[in-house]
Length: 312
Image (cartoon, rainbow, N blue to C red; front, side, top):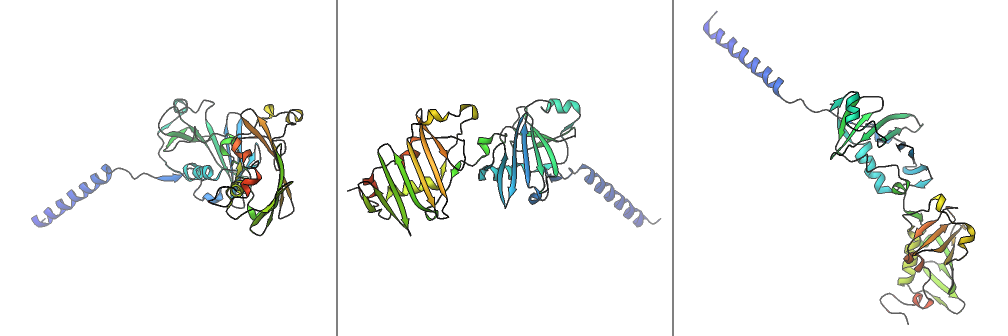
């Protein structure tokens, strides 16, 4: 064989061996997949449980709601984070550990495991995932029925617990000015009615009768609280007061809506705060601060003042 051809073959052989070595020594590209579903729109129901506590969520008309233990609107920002950090989160398909001992080492044999189920629109289970954190910066998870353990670079097991108060929207009632025709208020020091005509409100009680000036700050604060009437605390069933203990009414509000429905809000003294009941949630009592009640019990004179001017 000619010397030139031999050198060429040797060169090609060296290049092939070098290419093979580089291919073997190069780190394998990490494969990422979504934990629950590549199509997040397919997820229409979610169940979150820990031990005996279960929270059920359902998507209806593009909006998520709590369906159990109590029907309620979900807190939008929390739901958005959950969808992003859990449902739509990707993970490396390479397990960090596997086997029965791994499940014990990573805390999957304790009652603190957080179980998340994703369901489709027909209620069929898409996937069930268990999350655990034995005290590390990030969480670990396993798919139900599997002994492979994976890592997720998010906090799930200790953040997204099935706590109703943590998931529910704080709003008990939301009514805006153009949804109301009148607001009647009764409290120990006065009774008055506010009626709306267009964008103007009229104040009337036993003594006063006048148009509320546009931009009146007292009227503005009252409308603002009705647009976001809420509470972060609901009395538990065992702490619910008896009707006899709620005879002392601090303030009662009756609202006539433009659709002719009537809404009723009642406030009762409760230690340093107040209990609030709203007819949209019968049998439930919400703890509110004094400022909420104070918005409704202002003096007539304060409804007369114009924006930027003291009351006359």
